[in-house]
Image (cartoon, rainbow, N blue to C red; front, side, top):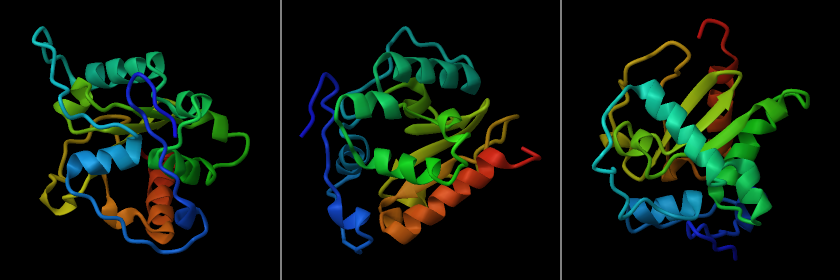
Length: 184
């Protein structure tokens, strides 16, 4: 099991990799964040000095913080951590051609203004295109009609209902289509 400064923990999911269906039970949103990312945003608050700039400024800052803190696919792998977001990202990345896989990036944004204000827990990017993802155990209570910006896809919801191999694959295909869509 991997633990570090952020408390990132490894969750072994052999049944998922073997294609077996398994039920996961979560007591609340923080449990689901622990499962997805290896840590949760409980206790994380906005710095009192924070002043709202724009979605793009928050996105840029969150991506920069994720890179600095190793909250990227490569950062987690280098530390030997494999929470579920790693499996999800691998599912997405493997849909791309071999030459394009290195262009696809994952950033965990828990606790940043992008998360606390905009509800974005994870960002998948490729060539200045972004898909923002909110992980939740209450997908039916979420606002799915977020504004669209240039180079910004619809905000996608990933919930515990997406945890089967079949549903995770469908989700990955939607991310692929958004990142490669011609008329973004």
